[in-house]
Image 1 (cartoon, chains in turn blue, green):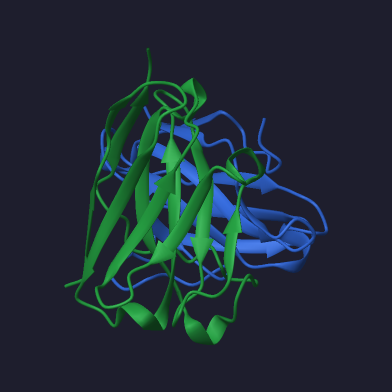
Image 2 (image 1 turned 45 degrees about the vertical axis):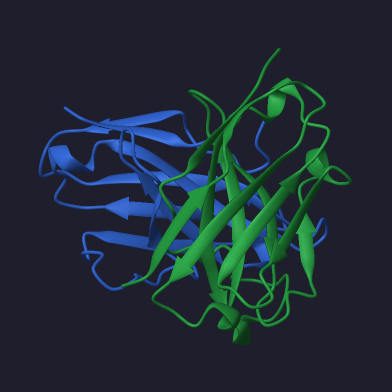
Length: 110
Length: 128
């Protein structure tokens, strides 16, 4: 069971917007940066967002990140069928000195 | 282009050992932290271990592998290692290495999940 809580699945129609939440505590999300990863079927994870809301080069601005208190959110606009994937949040836990991942959210583009 | 190539996975019996390698190229290896993350079949991501940049003096492990796994950086080669001893059935997974944040983030700090890119992974199967 993951310490960071994500919804198991979300869905939306092509062209629509979806948000994925990630809930933690004061020792992890509450005091550290959050990253988000996309894992397409059968491939390695890819970094989408780091430091709460920064995008690596090559990641389109359809992907955005935000953080408030002990929760973080990934937003995806203009959904495409190619966005169907598993999405994971991750952060450092200052009390335990470990990296934590959320359990993952499966995005279905209907 | 940054590239990470894992090797060393395979089938091993419970209690056995394996050494995973991750050959890095396309960046200044010593300037970045490095990490190992695993994924059991059909499951989510599980962080395993991380090492700081430069000489890799700071190392971190998830509780389930402490005392059994050792992460290290090559001294003269741009390679990350994971020595895995006393392997258990529950260690069965694809093991990914990833480039971590640059050294200016500090060791074991906020931002230590800036893992980019990831290798293609190597499969470790622990079974009798």
